[in-house]
Amino acid sequence: QINVLQAKKKFEILDAMLSFMHAQYTFFQQGYSLLHELDPYMKKLATEKWECLKQASLTGPDFPESFHCTKTEETLGEDFSYDDSKVEFNVDAPNGVVMEGYLFKRASNAFKTWNRRWFSIQNSQLVYQKKLK
Image 1 (cartoon, rainbow, N blue to C red):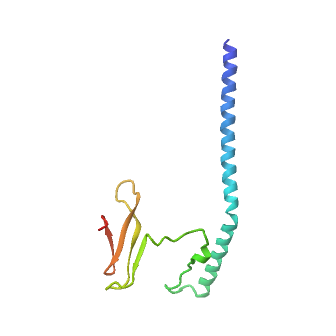
Image 2: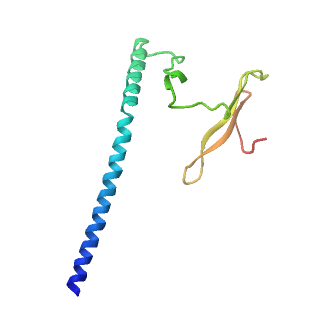
Image 3: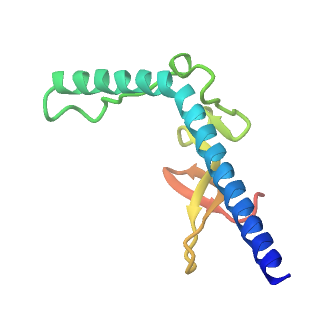
């Protein structure tokens, strides 16, 4: 009886180990296939990065502050979307352009978590509002 019980235990342990190994295999195989689909996009980003570096090297080591290597929505395609409902621009403000919207603010507690908070620019100063009025 004891020998039969020990043989069953070995079988159960082997079965659990095989199912764990199969789960690990499936997890990494799915990860590989997902990253393999991103390969053309990563190559496109790498070429854009090199083009930006070439352009920066053409302007010299001290290129002006106005130089930015930015992407427009046309070059991004469907990768990233811009949501107008989260940011508002008021061009007719008396003190110039006033912008307001959500930014991430780092908490001052021990965990240093990031929280989404409402900020605005008023009188050329960044203003944080705890309650949206």
